[in-house]
Length: 606
Image (cartoon, rainbow, N blue to C red; front, side, top):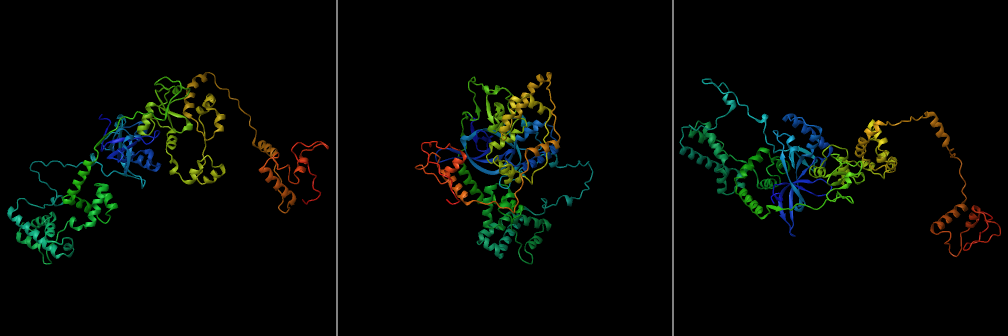
C-alpha cells in the first residue's frame, strides 16, 4: 500500500513509450481534473542520452574534476559506463503528466564531495545530479544550492595561546568594536536617545521630497523612521562619540540638516516590489535568476536585503496564508496500482512453454547486453530491422537507467530508432546524406566538404568469422539489402562456439593470381571501345514526314492497343511499317479484324 502511494516531492518513473526508458520526474503538485482524473505537475530531469554530445563532453570534464578533488577510488570501465546511467541533470522545466503513467519511485540526491560514486551502483533506483540543464539555452551550469562540506570549506583554527602569552596580532584588522555593553549610560538614557533618533528621522522624511511622495502621511513616515536602519545609526553614533549624549545629538542634526537613513524597503518602488514577488513565485530563492530576468538594475546585495526585510511585512504573511489555503485544497497524495499489462515489445514464441520463451534458445541468439542465451522472457530492442533483443533483467535495467549494462555500439542505434527526431542535431546536408533514397552522386556533393580519408582494416578474427559463420552471415542476402545492418554480436558469439572445433581442421586458403594493372586496363579498353564524337559543324537532316508519323503513332499506340482500333481504321503509314517489319506472302488472306495493308506513299507528302 505504501509503495503505491505517491506524494508531493517524490521522485518517480513516468512511462511515455513502451520501448523508450522511463522519465525521471519530481512531483510538485497533484491536481484533479474536471473528468475526475489526476494530473501531476512535475519537474523534468534529463539523462545523458537526452542532451547533445558537446554537453556530454562538458559533463565528462566536470566528472573528472570531481573525482580528482574528492579522491574517488578507481573504477573499472564497466562501472564508469553504468555510473553515467545514474547521473541526471536538473532543470526548471515543468510539465503535466497523467498520474496513471507512474511506474514506481526512485531516489535523486545532490552529489556531495563526501559521497563515494560506487555506492550509487550498489543501490537500486538511486540517481544523483550536480549540474542544471537549460532546455531552451542548451547549457549546463553548476547547481547553486550545493552544500559546502569538505576540507576546503573548514575554518583554520590557530593554536591556543599559552598562559601569560600576549596576543601580538593587530586587533583593528581582525575586528571592529561597534558596541560596548559596559558603557556609562543607563538603559533609560539609551531608550530616550533612540526616541530622539526616530523623531529626527521623521522630520528628515518630511523635508525630503521623494520621501514625502512615497510616505504621504505622518503615520507612514513615523513607521519608516522606526525601522532598524534608524536604530542602528543611533547606536553607531553613540559608539563613535564615546557615549556622550550631547555630542551624539549634535551628530544626528549637523549644520546641513537632519540625517536621513533609508533601507531597501524605502529605496524600492511599488512596481519593483511587485516584480520581486512575481520572480519569487517563479524562481524561489534563486536571487541570481531573479536579478538576471526581472531586476537587472538592482545589485545582488540589494535584492537579498529586500527579501529579508520583505519577510517582516504584512504582505509576506498574506501570501503565506494564501499559499497554505491553496495547498489545503490540493491533493496531498494519490494511490496508483501496480501496472500489470504486458509490454508490446515482449516476444512470445509459438509453441513455447508457459513462463518460458523459446525464442531465446535459437542458435546464435543472445542478449545484446549480458550475452546470455537463456531467459524467462525476451523483449525486442533497438531498430526492427536489426532484430535485437534483451533478457528480462537487462530490459528492466534499460527501462530504469536508459542504457545497457555493458557498452556496445548498438546502444546508439537503438537510441536513434526510439527517438523520432534523432536527426535534429544534424545539419541538413548530413541528414539528407543518411537517407537511403539519396543518390550516390548527390550524396557525394553534399559530403564533399566533410569527407575525410579513412581505412577499413578487419581483424583476423573477423575474417575467420566470415568463413566459419557463412550460414549465419548470409553474404549474398546481405548484399541485396545494403541498408540493413548486420548483427555482429550474434556472429561473434557463434564464431566463438565454432572456432575451437575448426582449429583442429585448419582452413585451406587458395591464393588467387591477380593480373597486372596494365593487362586489366587493356582488357577493359577492348571490351568497351570509345565511340567517336560527332563533329559540331555537321547537322543531321530531319524528315518532317517521319517525325509527324512517329508522333501520331506514339500517341495512338500509347492510348489504345493494336486490336482495339475504332472500326478497323489505322493511321497512314501504319500498315507499311508493319509490313516492313514482318513480311507476308503475296495473296495470303488477312487476319480477321485487321485492316488491309496500305501501299507505301509515293512521295514525301501525306
